[in-house]
Image (tube, rainbow, N blue to C red; front, side, top):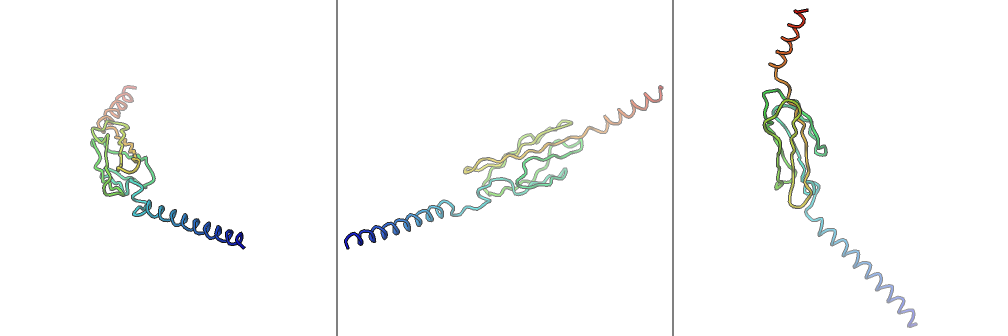
Amino acid sequence: MFVIDMKKGFRVSLVINIILFALFIMMMILYFTKGTDKKELNPGLQTMAIEEGEIDFKPDRYAYMVEVNNDVDKLTLSLVSYEKGANIKVDGNEKFKEGHNQIVITVSDSATTPKYYYIDVIKLPSEEVDDELITEENNASNNE
């Protein structure tokens, strides 16, 4: 009879330990996920807009291309992060030259890895250059 009681006692003790361990795991999950949601875990941009053109912004897309007229030297950007305290840094948004120019937008906070967004800005050639080419082509065709 003593052996039977020990087996029952062992089973009860094992069940209690399993229940306590499960409660501990649930408490740890609640503690480490309390107050977090997708926005807090992702310091990325929620919206991006520019005045000088159109961007089809999607938060999970990190590279964009936009064409601007020759008189545009920088973009007027409107950037909103998911996280209120996130730091948004913009590099390369000045003194565009004709052709390709790259803007790098870095969104970071103290708790997660930064997110990088790239905008390839294509500054179109000036109309004066086009007019000169047309004049040269007309002169060449008139001389023939």
